[in-house]
Structures are given as structure tokens and as C-alpha cells.
Length: 294
Image (tube, helix red, strand yellow):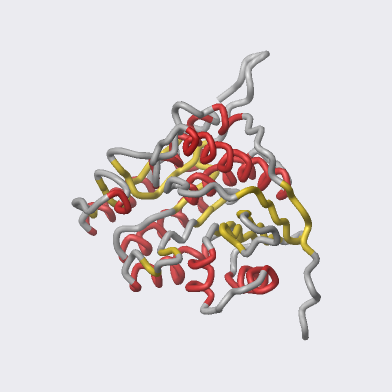
């Protein structure tokens, strides 16, 4: 694909593997919207179908049968256009078996395009505990995290996946480095300021913390959104600090604007300018890490 003079260069294809809701802006729905708004052609493989986020009330949950999901994965894996995919963003899974199938797909994309980026959002729980089966969380840890270039766990997920208790920024950094991927973005990491949210990106060239004010009663979907935005920013060749700052600012601004308008869902369509050119104030700092002991 070529661009014409005066037009921006086309963005690379991204494959999103995540949940699908009929109403709302969580899971694959928010990630796909953000990526397409930023100009990426998106391939979307749903793992589970829900009418809305489970936190908004009990509802039916439809998981694709294992045989059907495997067949879709196999079809995608042998596509003659698979080499166009420059990033795979994986999120919520409906069963542990899906992790094994998705791992096959990630490997197939990497074979077709060795420079591809795998961003694994190990969606499995929050401060209230696991909200997927322990076997599903373990399958994400064992099959998808080892293939990831970037992981984006929240604090609870980092603790569960690493088997560590985390009460400080230093402990979050240590657990992130032990997790495996070259880059780990810890959302809801311990913040230095009161009433603040910290996104901690632990990478090969050091650790960067992006902090901003806490927005009470924030809608769901922020983890899905920041994983997609970080993937887009890294694909654009931005350095870690700029990629993190832009992603955190966009999420913060979209959350603040949605809450201000009294919405219980992220207003991705009405406030989509926040995705493209966020103006929210986010402070970034480089974190001094103590040298590792031999």
C-alpha cells in the first residue's frame, strides 16, 4: 500500500484477540475502535460474546466452542495476507484452551512477519480477585506471556502472574522484570502522589512512571484501551517515554471527559479526539533502579 503526497503514511495491520460486547466500550470493542481511529486496519478475533460488561449486571456469556475457535485460528494462520499483521494484541479469554490456540496464531504471525509485536494484556482479575477461572489465568501465564514482547497487567494481575506481593514501586519493577517480556506496563502501580494513578513501564532501557490524577468511578475498559494505544505508539516508532505518555494521557483524558458527562461507559465515539491528540496533563519521570544483586 502506498500513500499519496500530502496524505499520512498508512498504518500497519493489527490483529486483536479479545472479548466482544454488544453494548459499551470494553474488551475488543474499545481496542478495535481506538486502533481504527488511529488509522490501523484491524483484524478482530472475538473470544467470548457478552451483551455488556459483567460489572453492569448479570448476563449471558457465550464462549465460542473450542473446535470452532481452533478452526478460525487455523484459517487465519494460513492466510496469504498474514504477513501484513505487524502487531497482535491479546486480551480476555473465554477458556484455557483458547490460550493454546492463540499461541499457535501468534507463532504463525511471527513466522510470516518476524518483526511483529505481540502485546499481551493478561486480563484475569482486579482488587476483588480473579474473575476468570484459575486455569484460564494460568494458561495466559504459561502460553501467552512467554511469547509477548509487551505485557500490560494491572497490579493484581502482576502479583498473580509473578507469585509476588507488591506494596511498593521497587517491588513492582522487580516483579515486572521477572515476568518475562522485554517491556511490562504495570497499570495501577503504586503511585508516589496521593489520589493519583501510576502507569509504570519497565523496559530494556529503564523504567518510566507516568502519573496523573485519579478519576473516581472511572468506566471499565481502560486496560483494554491503554494496551491498544501503547501498541499503536510503539508501532509508530515512538520511544518508550513518548509512547507511554501519549497512551496514558489519552486514557486519562477520555476517562475524565466520560465521567464529566455522567457516562458509565467510555465515550470513545463522542470524545475520540482524545485518542488522536490528547491534551491531558500527565507527568513522566525516569525511575532509579537499584542494581541487581549477583
